[in-house]
Image (tube, rainbow, N blue to C red; front, top):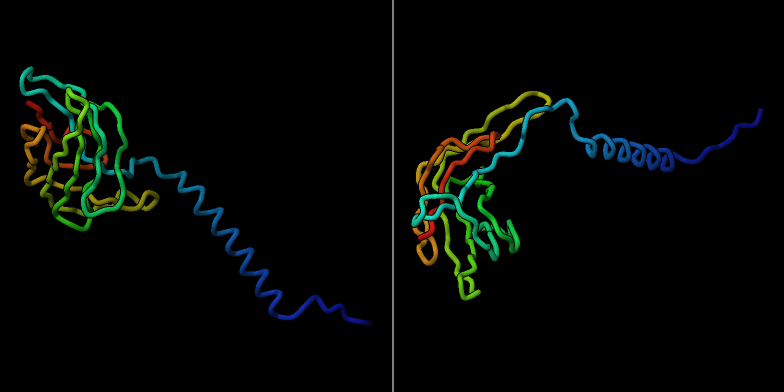
Length: 166
């Protein structure tokens, strides 16, 4: 009985690699549907008017994490920000550009000194890095001050700081 040759070992190896890559890509692209916990950890900052002692909205030109090459937010009006803290460093800084009354922009920098604690949520969700704020400060071109309201920054979005404007 004649044998049918299906190809050399290289063809089967290539086919195995292609099928494996396709299967792995489809598994990782769907994420873990068994994870119900929030896996994002952000510091929540609210803007407050020192003159009126109430929350306020500002027009921001940009918010950029210093030490990174990405702009965290593009021009918009905002009364609150959700900012990521550095998981492998104890100092995180953001440059923030604010629109003034005469439509010019002024930039201030906000600094956060914090400790980092790795925390395992579950086997399904994996882990996150939570933070404890030790200090917060800012330059004072447009901003007045920064106060810590809740020092613990975790995966529950709660106001952590108030950024005061004059």
